[in-house]
Image (cartoon, rainbow, N blue to C red; front, side):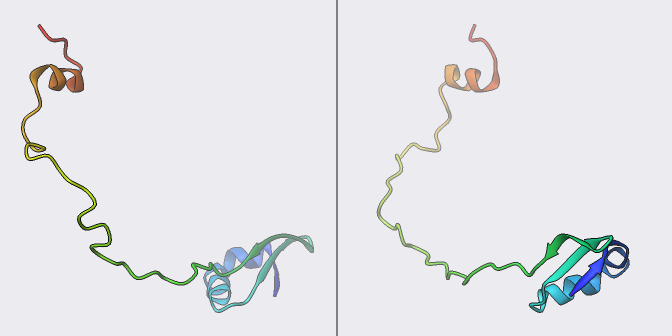
Length: 81
């Protein structure tokens, strides 16, 4: 289907629905095709597999311990006195 720009502005919602339903919509200016409205293709949705990397990473026992003062000062942009 080909529509002119004015028609596309006034009927955008219907044209988007048409594209979503598989129709290609050509938007023209003075009869010259300028743009194409097509449906998005997302491809097949992959199922999430939880636990795929279980046991592959180890965290230190103290990973959530407070940072040393000099490192904390560097992150905060302070100079260590």
